[in-house]
Figure 1 (spheres, rainbow, N blue to C red):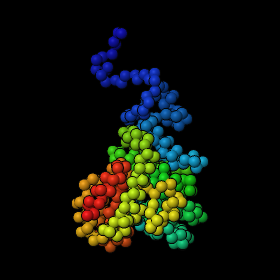
Figure 2 (cartoon, protein in one colour; figure 1 turned 120 degrees about the horizontal axis):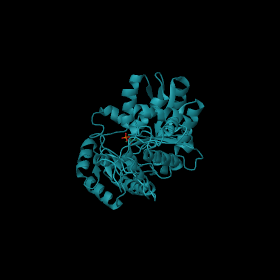
Figure 3 (cartoon, protein in one colour; figure 1 turned 180 degrees about the horizontal axis):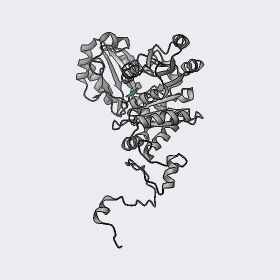
Length: 398
Ligand SMILES: *Cc1c(COP(=O)(O)O)cnc(C)c1O
């Protein structure tokens, strides 16, 4: 072959990739932009007349594959054609969705025991934009209805079920019915459950969101978030547009990691749930333990509700040690097998003592109001051999 290009041009330019066969695994589409064959093609892609990618903040094949897969999973067997947008993190998903839907003067009806970052976002950032949270007990339907009736600035109801740290549940269908009667959007953070255990779109919720960082990816190596909505037009015109302009987009590598993690979601969740139940049952019988919070235990106040709206009780639990802060710190120092880390949903068992770790700067009175007592331990039960987790807990409790 006669070579016409200069040496440096051969170095600098991309080779044509010929694909006589499709790869079995999704490639990593690490490209910030996509080229057009002709100017006409470019014009029609930009106008939205023709499908195509142009710039990865707007969209990317690997990111889109995850959006389509997550929309299918969240709307599974619901008959809904949902639309998803992937974000740089769970917090990006939450903040972008709220900024898409709310204006200054609007209020969000929500619960006090939200994920800490979400509470911070509502009280410290959205507050500056004159978007205010109204905190209440969302399992008290009378209180919810009274607030919706009396406060006309409430625009949406935002909730988590089960929620940290006591795994308290909210009746999704009941809450949706009340919110709908007052014309309010409902948004649920479904991170603890994943669509394998709980599918709120089928129960009438408008938007489901996740930190995919947790169970959906599952391997502790990627950060991303997703919003899945039942109103496709609203998702495109509002949520996608805000994502694109706020720059809260995901990236090819995190989407590619998420793609691998999602393949084993059901296997992992089954094992998380099986192990969590075994550990909850063991802890409930241990004399050093005051109380165990796990929705799969008959002793949990929301046992029946969880059984009704979740397919299994999940991999998260918390328990209270007799002996308060001292006991909590001694217990944490005794743990060898479990990992001390402030995240959840990984395949390894993760353990957290909120009073000395995640909530060390929160005054005791405020902590305790949300159930975070001195002796409370939170466990994200992994998929290891249950006997190894049990032996570690038994040893640390002794
Ligand atoms: C971790 C988490 C978030 C925040 O997600 P990031 O991916 O860390 O931004 C939101 N909600 C829940 C329930 C979480 O556990």
